[in-house]
Length: 410
Image (cartoon, rainbow, N blue to C red; front, side, top):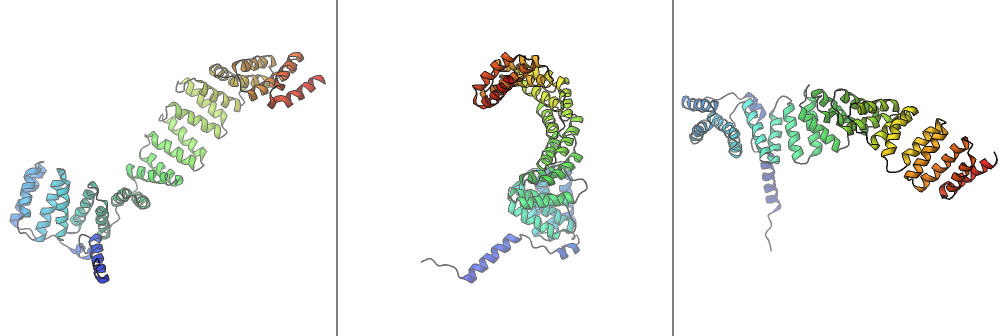
């Protein structure tokens, strides 16, 4: 049978473990704030000065050699702390990060440096622990930094946000980066990008829009920020604001790609501004920013039709119909001529629609519309013939019969 520790022993073990996790350094804030620089002997001062001179000349190797020897001598705590701190910076500068971490830990264990260099060492240690992907230790030491610090620090909150994000603590990461942004008049661009990415993940589009406005103020030349702002506004059901955003970006010549321009035109249409959409597309075609393909010509003609510019709509519609694989657009062209009471031309394009090919339901509708045009031309035999064909299509049969009755009663 296994021997389990007593409850008291288990509690003592757990208590010791939690204490170790809570803090690697015992630093009293009140004592730290009162702490003055210690005395440095002439010998220690001379060696430190020589090491710093080598470092200023980018001779880290010579500086490290002096400092490593100094760590093996018996100095007062303040002197040892200065030596370890200088050595830590030297190691970090030559990317010996593991040794730099160890040196900063030794610096802090001396518990002898004044307030400012103590906090600098603690912050640098946390940064090195992030580089080593030891995020729990980094978080612990940064928490201690916050506990000891007297003033709010935006960079520290942004750093904590980074650590929290690495630990997949999205809520904490967002809280910390928003705090960093709140603490500064001109937030760093990467902080705002970070905040937007988390807000987007959480579908908090209204708040994301606020951050994106700040991003554009920070750097208005990045079209990605304009596109993201428009997207977040659309997700917040602010389509007019999204349209204004994209239009302004277009005027700044940030949006020049075909899909971007077509997207703006579609937004004009969805906001019931077909005339503006047509002008926008017309400009796009004239500047050769938009390809004159079937899809784009159809969109242009649609905007003109909705704007009641029927004569103008017929030009792009005819080109789109010629490029189409079926007769659907010829049928639309015929309807426009029917609306304009140009019945002979309408019949011509209804025939072209049928000839190019239509689905059965569409064909039935077109045959009836062709018959209507022929009735207006008083060509009743041809109208009757078109209706006979329409009657053979189930979806058009009843309507065709009604029109045949109409002809008989004329």
